[in-house]
Image (cartoon, rainbow, N blue to C red; front, side, top):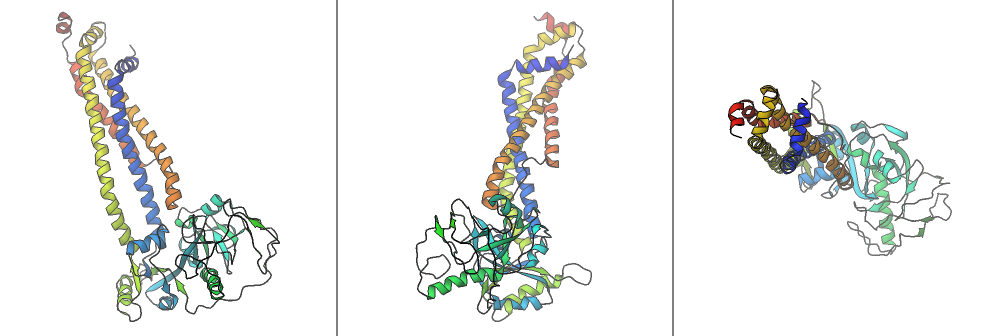
Length: 463
């Protein structure tokens, strides 16, 4: 007697009950699995990006906004701060590294970040090709930027004011040149365009000069007046660059830059009166090589109490991220409870279905016993029905969750510039799978015991 075949046909003979149990199991497992995938991968990415960054100093404002804009690059900055106000950080004994950031521009939605070589060193990123930016208007691209935009070494492009891809205010006065591309390292650096701080100043200083000459431009955050620009088709003639006459279509992102040559180095730009957006700080180490506890106490005190630093604000990434995760965790916890309730209801559905099935099939089961089937075989057969429902429901639920994660991965990358792996299998999913199988066994054990212990003679005599 093929017990598996009998169990399978028994399930197919009750399509509505079996289907309802399968759907409930799949929903509960799918929701739980999706939450596990989202929470674990996002938490890993978030914590990886703040690793080694002990404090962020910027303009006064929301500490969380400061972290989101300067570390994760998914929000607008709280403002700019004078460079002169943060020069003391380079000499402070409590600070091991002070990484400057100058934000405000982007290209096709990818942020252009003015910084120095310390940022790449902090994230321990290697070059895939080319070199690190060293001159003004040179850029090194994150791996995702190069992949998405198809940019190569030697290509040039114009940055746009603002941090959104829809910006129409193109900085036509200066073109950036790609000199290097980083390897992918699963940090926020994959989504950034890095240049030196002077390049960001230079681009905006040129606009200031144009404003003084009477050309009016309207750009958010800059005093340029008003002007209309046609970015669909335009020609640029750049002094010191051998471009000839080229037509650039900024909507299709096609650039012809062959023959581009630097004939003269750009003159140094003055730091007088310049501003940056934020500074990423790594605390100095103590005598044991651990992060200095004194630094975490003294630096906030220096900023709060030093005359002339009143406009500076600061945020501690670890604290702000923990608070953010706690707030997000409350909503996720409710969804976990909902998923658990659905899974429990599915187990009850399996139990009721099997229990009613025993009542309807008790004569059939008695006949099977009389024809030679043992009580143990009946017990296994009914347990197998519960296990099959749980097994296929769990597998279907896991498939749904990973397909759903694949859809969300595109949205997450487009909106937050974070990459997630939709097909990654987590240890938590394995535990979830076996827990659901256990519930399937638990739901079917009472009906199975009932079938095991039924009186064959009495059942047959009643029919």
